Image 1 (spheres, rainbow, N blue to C red):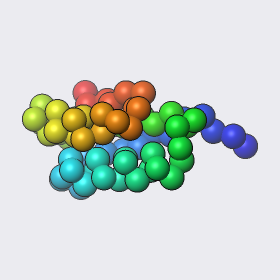
Image 2 (tube, one colour):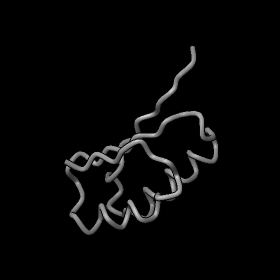
Image 3 (cartoon, rainbow, N blue to C red):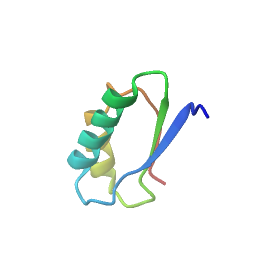
Image 4 (tube, rainbow, N blue to C red):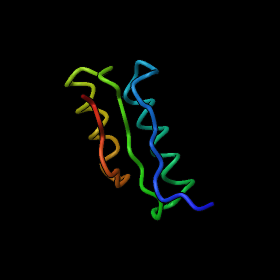
Length: 67
């Protein structure tokens, strides 16, 4: 079976920097052919979401769902 997208739950660890590090590592492992989507399930403040998004800007995420 071949997958073309991966959805990751973020904002469970209480630290957007840790979530960003995980997303960066996943991107390194799976390469650029797989789409990554991040879902925070309303667990971040605006500031936390902005911090996370600035840290993963080079990871080519399809979207970051915060609401």
